[in-house]
Length: 160
Image 1 (cartoon, rainbow, N blue to C red):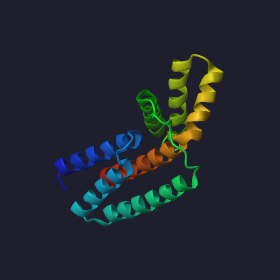
Image 2: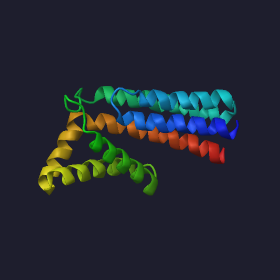
Image 3: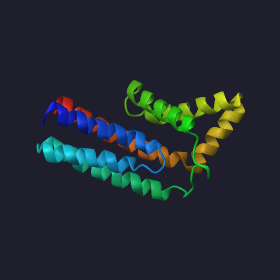
């Protein structure tokens, strides 16, 4: 597979990761489709194993999301800045403390945004709990899954 093809697959993966945070964009499907495209264009065993792993992890993620209480983020849609802070926090946590840092990074991003918006620690913590209860856990589950898949793809491209 050429460098341009890998770059395009990486861009679709990145679009999928951003799509998880945007309402109406099928982020997890874009991530899976990018891995499928890569596996079809570069039919090595490692590519197929990453595709199988991505499919299983996405399926398990959907099961977990369906098991969570069926609540939505605010009726008017979540604040774009809140999602940006949560996404960047999750990404930084994932990079700084590989894999497990994504969850505390997501929570820290939401907390930081609410702290800046509300100004007080208690109110920010209450807002964090509200966000996580009203659908934030579902977004976190999907984002974490897509980050795992993107990391597996990147690892397979670099070391595979």
